[in-house]
Image 1 (cartoon, rainbow, N blue to C red):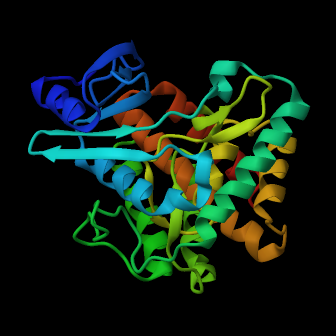
Image 2 (image 1 turned 180 degrees about the horizontal axis):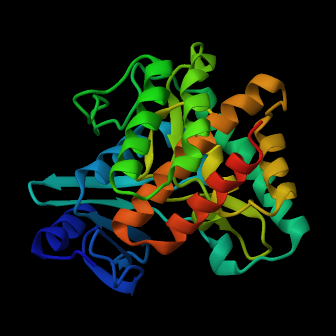
Image 3 (image 1 turned 180 degrees about the vertical axis):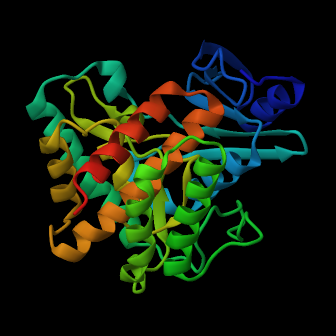
Length: 305
C-alpha cells in the first residue's frame, strides 16, 4: 500500500500504538487499505490515496452523507491531507463484501439488493447540494467549472465523453443516432437537483454478515453531487445486466416507479455511464470496464427506437 513515515505518524497520533493485521491492496499504486489493531484491541481500517479527487469526496461523504446510514456505514476517525500524503482512518463493518462471500443464491441476492436500494434512498433523501460534481472535504466544488444546471450537467458530460471516444477512435459512427437522441432529450432533467450519487455503487462495496444479510456500504471515494438516478447505471451495467430480478429488487427498495419519464432518464444516464466506462476502460487498460460499458451501449443502441 501507499505507506510511509507520515502515515505511520498519522495512525499513531489518532489511535496510539498499532499492529498491521492485513494489506488489502498490495498491488495498487492509487490507493492502499490496511487493517490494523490498536493497543487497546480495537480494529480500524486505514486508507491512503495518491489522488485528491478520491480523498476529498470520501472525507466529505463520511462527514455528511453517511451519517443517516447509522451502523450501515463506517465511522471516520481521522483524516490527513499533508501535501503529497493523504489518508483516512475508519471503523470496520463486520462481515465481508457480497463478492468476497461469493453469494450466488438469487433469493439472498434479491434481499441484499432491496436493502441496498432502501438505504441508498435514505442517504439521498436527507441531502441537497448546490452544484454537480465532486466536493472537496470542506464542501466546496473540487472542479473549477462545476455545473449548477442539471440539463447542462448531463448534456455536457455526454458530449465530452463521446468526443473523447470518437477522437480516440474508440467508438464508430453506429452510435451517433443514440448520441443525438440523448443530447436532444436532456431537458427531461430540468427539475433535478444535486444529491449524493456513487459511480461505484455495486455489490463489490456492499457488506454482508455471516448469514448473508446486508450489513452496510463501504468505499465512498467515487461519490459526488449528481442526478438522483446516476448511480443506477453502474448496477445494471456491471452486475445486473442479465439479472433483471436483482435490478428490480434494488429499484423496489429505492422506491422507484417505472413510469415513462423515469425510464427515459435512466436510458440517457445509462448512455452516459456506458460511454464513461468504455472511455475509462480504454484509457486505463481495464478490459472489464470497457467490456461492460460496450455491452450496455450496444444493448441500448440495438433497442433504441
